[in-house]
Length: 399
Ligand code: ADP
Ligand code: MG
Image (cartoon, rainbow, N blue to C red):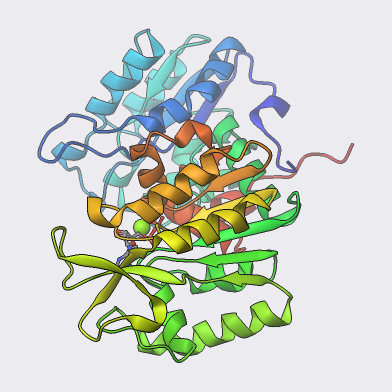
């Protein structure tokens, strides 16, 4: 890990502005947090900083208030859950800048935690505004970014703030960079990628990057239809992105040219309509009925994919194999997740919002080496891009 981390900083007695991603999902129309994984994820950094006598100024965004105070997007429910998980009181202020907030930050004792209000109540946050960033920075002596999931955004608390304070990566950020970074840059070989999801157009840049790095490329999900079309197969009423057929052909060509072993489904589950209770059956890919659409990979494909995966030493997975939200079409995704979960001698890394959700629902998160917390951010990372919140963090001093 080449970025300086919180372990490289002297935090004792210092005020630390800690950017976290507390953008948690809520049970619809309530203030009940549906999933507190994102809060749990930063607890190691919080505990580390407390233990070392730092004064914590914690900040986050929540939802899309678009630069205005939106009552339902206050961080109050997050503050309660955070406090419960921490097991001690925190101080929660109803703003994130200004004299009242500055006073609260100044009065912090070592080990105390102050939580600021939703950063996106100020339009300046999403504009990466320098004076807003400077005001945030004025609350602390040191800045720590532990919000990997927001680090693909050039926002004031992620990017501009690093112009005003010495900046470090938090422990969750460190883990994300280590796991995703190693998979791309220095993986145990063979390296395999399993790609799926609804649309190839969302994943073009990821496919283009991975096809240059992997030994095996395994493709399922809705996007397989576009690859079939690119190979001249008939896919019935499946969703095909006509404008991406050329891209699929190009990926196939690059895979061939780079000596990448490519795996596409040999059988699929097709349905008469796009619905949870549609009548469905397994067919070979050469026998897709004209009125049917592909909803999942078939059992023969599951076997084939699992065999290909088991010979890899590093596996990166992004994109469900089928419409996993519906029981009838969830088997492929579940089987791939179970294969990954059972691979004790490989590094398994999961990225993407829906894929992480699927793994979580199956109760298999802890069986993976890493499930990225950053949906969009993990995809941009897999695209090989420099993320504005990460590129701006300084590297470790050469030793
Ligand atoms: P991630 O968020 O992990 O990057 P995506 O958003 O690309 O994943 O893909 C997730 C979506 O893909 C799911 O909602 C799933 O229902 C859908 N999907 C997977 N396979 C198919 C298919 N054959 N037809 C339609 N949708 C599909
Ligand atoms: Mg998604």
